Structures are given as structure tokens and as C-alpha cells.
Amino acid sequence: MNQKNFDYLREQIIATGFSETLEDKLKAAIQEGKAEFKLNHSIQYGRDNVGVELNFTRSKQSDMYFFNSYRVSLEKAKALEKLEQTFYINKGDNIALKEAYHLLNTRAVNKDLTTKEGQVANAWVMIDFKETTASGNFKLKYFYESYGYDLEKVLSAQPIRQLADPESKSNLISALKEGNRVPVTIQVDGVDKNYHIEANPQFKTLNIYDSNMQRVINRQSRTEKQSVEQGQSAKQESSKERQTVADDDGPTVSQQPKAKRRKQAQTV
Image 1 (tube, rainbow, N blue to C red):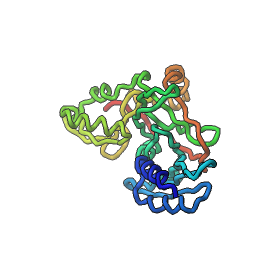
Image 2: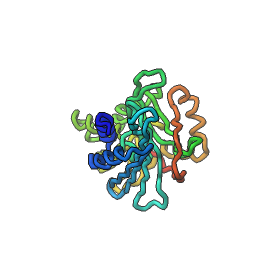
Image 3: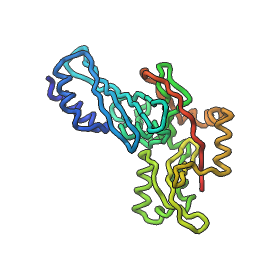
Image 4: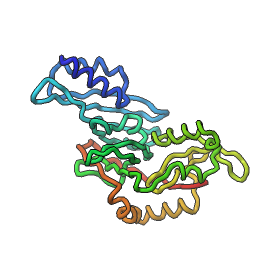
């Protein structure tokens, strides 16, 4: 067995968010010497079950193996269908497992990415559940800084208690950029109420949920919903996104599940 190759792959899968318990399976698979192999992994986030299949292939010129991609299958507690998506392994722009989970939950993740020109650029990543690639994967959309989504500015428009403390504010912003739905306290009519928020870069706003995890709807969110229902949002954004939004095209997945768009919201 190529020890250096094993060590590299081990560190690579750990950096992508997988458990060290895969180490023994990885070693055994490499020692078998097959042209390709898969490792299975499962994890639970809350009540959501996530199954993962990691894909490896051996070089045709040497005994080195490569971690090419992993396929995520998300099974939510009350959902009738599983959501599946394949994520590809690049040198420095990998989507980590927890980020993949957030993306499949319709949330956005903020990452530093390498452009085709080799430049590092910050972008928000989302899954477009309305479009698939020729091979069947859902497309990924990238909203770069030039798109104009300012998370800190959007947060400042809300009377969120956590913004008053610099450390709490920093932690809140970091959690939102990681794709989390974050609990916050918002003052409404002089009364503190508990909500959850998540970043929504596509509509340059926040998604806000009440204590029952129901979306908070107001005038601006109804306008957004109407735009989506009329099928106009993609056309309206296309001219703005042409220079800042890219699509991801990759290998096939076994299913093309349907995903209903949730109602959108901006402010309380």
C-alpha cells in the first residue's frame, strides 16, 4: 500500500467533514487494489438522516487513489422522498459534509472559491432545485460579492438583540455563513420574541421563522413569492447574475427528486 497516498486521502476525507472511523475502511479498500471503490457513511442531524457514498478511483499510471466525489442522500423525518446530490472534490473548493446538508435544506453557504482564472473570490452557494445538469445533478448557483448581498447590512435592519454585543454578532454572522439556521431574539412591538433566521443571498434578505418554525410573511416576501410563482424570478435575475452566478455541471445521481419551494420572507 502506498502509505503517503493513504495519509493524504485520510486527511482529505477528514477535512471534508467525515469521521475518522472511515480510516480502517479506507485502508482495507486500498489494500484490495481494485480500480475503484466506495465507502459508505451515515450521520444524523437532528431528526434528519444523512447517508453518504464516497467514491474513489485508482490512477491508470500508478498505485495512487483519488477521492473524486461523494453522494449525499437526505431523508427528512416527514418527507416522502429523499433528496440526493453529488458533490465533487477539488483541490481547495470542496463542499464539506455539513455544508452539503445545509445546501440540501435549501440554505446558502458562504465560501472562498477559485475562479476559472485562478483568482480567489468569495461567494454564496445555493442549490437550484428547479434545474438539473445534463447528467441529472441539481445545479449550483454562485452569488459573488459583485452581486451585492451584504449580510451585515441586512442584519442591521432587524432589531436583533445579539447584534448589540460584538462577540455575539460575530458568532451570528459566522454561523449564518456556514449555512446554519440560527436562533435569535427580535424585538417586536417592544416585546422580545424568539425567532430563527438564515441567509437568503438570492433575494438579498433573511429568511425568518417563528417559534413554530413557520416562515414569517410580510409585504416584501409576498412580492417575492408572487415572482417565483409566475416563473419570473429567474428571468429577472439572469441579467444581474450573468457575470456573478455560475452553474455546476457534474456526474449523474440516481434520482431527480422534486423539491417544493418554500414561502420566502425578509423582515419581521
